[in-house]
Image (tube, rainbow, N blue to C red):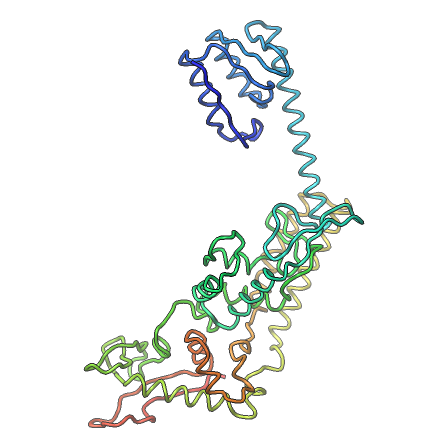
Length: 423
């Protein structure tokens, strides 16, 4: 039987299973092949273990081996097997040496802050004749998409809603296919967005490409997406303004949208302690929130002048720890420490950095109110917002408790809805 067996894009040195090679061995064992023709011995194997297995099988079944580059491979004699083993050792050495050169080049690129691999979403590559290397420049359309995603996340839009909007606008994704929630999170959370170079899963310094997000924006995005319960992240989609936000004034359970005798209402989810017409409660809450945001002093009232002392201290601590990691990376580049020492330093400091950054990552709630504060017509600006954004603003600003109405009351009594400002 004759067959052409090919393992494309699978190196004999990689150690990965090669289906066609396994088929070759099975065919020899079954007596289907009495000769093997290969381009070169190192196309068959570069592992001594594989070579010994091949020699054993070929010798047992008296199979002839011919190569285009090295001629006949006589494995039936001690001298022929010696030559095969020597060629195998040389091929193994060449593969290991080549791998070492590649790893060294990658290390040097990493320490120099140069990117490697495929083009990253948000940048394009241009050849720089001055350095002899390609350089990354911002790709305006894709960078704008990343900035739009970051702004939407901070503003409280759900990941699902952002994905839907991007696909509706036919904006390109990193894969060229429609946006997905997983793909969107990966793109917006990358350290490279703020110009940080990652190597072996750790930030080792600044990259040599221009950032497309500022550090503060990126930190806010990380904080929002790291905590799905944070008020600025609406998460799941709700169909009504106060569903799950308003609470029962009797038992404290969430109020959900439902029907009460054919009337759209909010009802207590635990025992139906309270039920109130949905339109009345929505309009009351909106009127109070919009009225507060329309006050002349609203900008000063809802825009914090500075972070708390604790947050500033945490931010300073995180910056100090990151600087220590950067210094260690410089020491490694200058040969004062080896790679293992760099990895140990990074492993020790990274948990401390994560803790400090978590303390410092207090999300600035002002982006949620963008477009409302200082608007000429706050109610019109409010009505133009998508529902998830309006829900996030309400949840940010007020606590809503719906109490029982007086027995026999027929008209809506605003006093039965207790609204307490959070900020």
